[in-house]
Image (cartoon, helix red, strand yellow):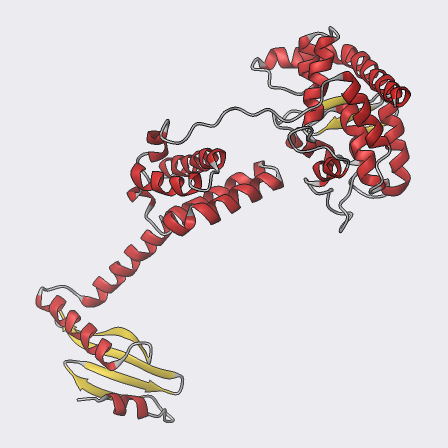
Length: 397
């Protein structure tokens, strides 16, 4: 019979040797370590079961595992086969946890998303879902358990985030169903269970006099020249903030006075043409000597190989004294939409220039060709109108 002292004091020799304990259990001592083994017979064949490595597996633990193996033998079960099956079950369980499937889903889907979207979804799951549900088998997660986790987010007052998180989790569940690892999506049972969120519109300035004052403030911006140029172009083209900061010189055609944004950068995944007014061209020509040799028109501060930060425009607006409930980078779109509609420009032309969705793909293609001349006319009128508003603000000051 082995003792703890004998196991601890066993020293490696030139060749491996055994220290037997009884019931087939022994300690195999080798130059590389000490290993617990158990010899047994099953169906008239001599077999060996690996129990573990000392000191991670102590003598008492090894004896317990040996006794468990003997109980299996008494039931005519091969302990080596039972161990292999157990490992396979554990591996299967690990591969089918919510976190494992969510990571797999994110890796596949993130290639279609903007970098910021992929980052935000990843952080949301890491901070608010994985700590409580990450290790759970996805097929075992029920609606009440998911609701309890989402309630934690609501407890911080983050009602909108709780709704978004429910949507992300639901997409993971649906992916699990599609890949045969879950049978249903419990997030669907939670519709109406979370605190409703009132629809919020991006803060925007639409009063003509206030627009003129904003344009004057932009022209007088004392920060980075790159940021000022981005601020100057934003109201002239009224694209989404992500489309503006990811703008590349290769997309600009000065001869045609066009900015062609590739489909993969657009929300609707279709190429978008932005007619460039004379004022927009002037802004681009002003910054070209500074950034024209690089990829991005508006590169980041730390690296020219990356676009400017998504917070740059909003931070600049705050610096100019505009609070987040007054004006945002996205607000230039609302500004253009409101004022262009007020001045009688056709709704379909405005919507097409805003790159809003068009349910009829054939109509979308037709509208693209039909409205481009009118859009060129509208974009130049809009730029001239903004110029007049800025001049009026200067006169009234």
